Length: 473
Image 1: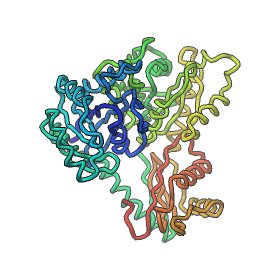
Image 2 (image 1 turned 90 degrees about the horizontal axis):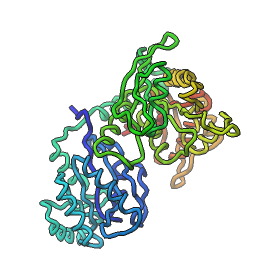
Image 3 (image 1 turned 180 degrees about the horizontal axis):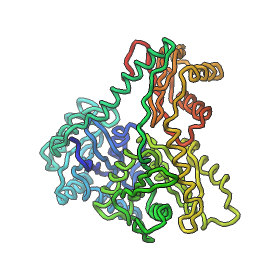
Image 4 (image 1 turned 180 degrees about the vertical axis):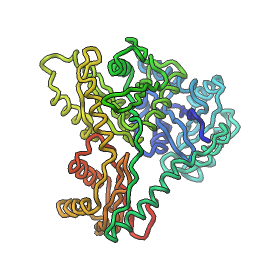
């Protein structure tokens, strides 16, 4: 069985050794900024990783230069120290290109003092010569050295096999089993579609609607919960981080049962007590895994940023429906109190989430409190949308005629069938001649058209491309 609390692995090292490159490779998306310049990553970045069926939380930290007197260095050192304190294991990243560095020795001394299981990775060892030169890093006093290339994926298996064994981790086969089941369902659905029939999609059984309230600390998540309940069920204080675990609260509204999950704030990684943020982040991730819809609470009176888009992206990755609640609307100046304009502004700020419904609200005045719940309920119902295959194929034929897919090496993908294979989230599979010719932009074009045609606002949509005669993989 996988652990109830996911292990946390921190990547630590001096500047410009490739920490963020490894982080992004494992997350399979550019969650961390990668530049060939030291000091780019200053805050801790968290991400959930599944690697060879092993699940864990990975933390990227800023480069440690203990002799640097720059104004940001004390904060960066604090962030790295907190990451080390809360980590179960540490990847000590160095790099073979420039060789052993006095800064590496300083970081090594810091890690030995921390006493955490530490795995020395020598990055940029992407040639036989550099792999041989990696042996000099044994001078740092660690029992084993792992030559790797974060850019090319070399040596990463050996590194993580050692980490998994040290932490006595066990693989979690559940995600793989789910993918295989979806693959089989896609195959059956396409065969049925080609024969003029629809593969039946199982609609989730009725039960309490589970809604997670997510967002950064101090935006009013617990206050919204209390306003919904009409009582002080969740502790509210004018300070960030009051709620540390995900708290389930039952609610009946308009004869429907709800479970409201009030999560700890997924905050930007500064001013955090060691150990608390790890528990809070994992708790929020788990809440999103079991929620039907997530209500993303934003502070109307504050600016929105990268951390907000990261939280909303996490909700979509987990397959949750999504609603944005612009809280503290009572603090917005009168001239800016245009709810439609606010929704448009959110859409421009987060283009990838322009489809998400926006509700302006105030937990203090009670403005639109139950509109949030009504909107979340509508999104939950839309997650169960079932679209007939014949309609989908007429729409796909029209979309391809209006805007053909790009050609790859003078070959253009041919689309044969589209059909729906899942609800909650909504999942479609398309049979194509060459899926490598269909880039992400074209997939978004199809998804956006389906979303607009069937009004699937706030609903995560998955699109699987499958070549005839091949498994989707």
